[in-house]
Picture (tube, rainbow, N blue to C red):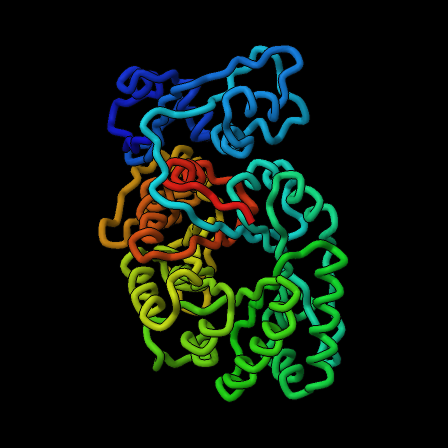
Length: 427
């Protein structure tokens, strides 16, 4: 795959002619929201089909895969849109292989989804995932689980060979992390053991293969209690062949202070868990000043500390799949950014005639525009260039893979990077 950055005067047809590929192929692969109004600075993935199959009457995904001796998942990754349809259409073209694409590594990818994810988005995404983490079960100090509607999503995941992971988080009914809920469970041994029993029963009944523990904003004084809880969970799950995964805040040292960081003991938790997700995002967030969500220089610092105290084969690097639009001027405590998908960020740049710039240090694109009310906005988002830079950190640091927060919007640029660089491991 090549990455092309749109220049002044470019059209989708001129770019297609430059690379000897059809305009329709570029539009389809990138799901371009603006094929007739390209933005200067916009990055586009260029993939050259090598082996193409034209669907005949009676063809199925599995019969085509057998004919070319490839994994059906490879066909789905090369042609994500066919996962949306129940049947293949005679006459449509299916790419079996792309030219000059040899995987450089084999990785695990875990994708996070809420139960209300659009089913077509889920189906297009599943072939890129090893695991699907469903957000999220809550709990009480007495050990009762607060369930979610997950049966349909588990069933769809299994159709695609993606293994479901149960998530557990101390959250209120309105979806906020609650320090007290976690603390009350930590200090109630009977409730904690009952909670673990309920978790195991739910996992076995529904086919979950692991538990993702996402405890954020834990009291510093509960640091050891949190470690003990993870050890308790692991001691019960491991004999059953079930995984324990723990989400960790993005730390750059063991001495980092703050409610988000202090109870997340990288060495201790990394030694216990099967996998840890380093949440290498949210530098830019809803209430921050305008800045990248996951600047590469900051991500690198977290990974450097992470691999110094945790086995890299246990580490999943967090990948954000969202962007933010800030109205200016930014006022601390008042300004709240608007969350966008990365595709929406491109569409907005096209709508307002913005020019996309690229921060070479953060390896992230951004732009400014003025809305109809005369208000200036600044947008930071991710594109195929920034995703390429992020994902290449995985083999550089020898990590197990990535965890994508979240997969609620399909981001073709990200998945093209994955498909061109890696083989995604099966569970």
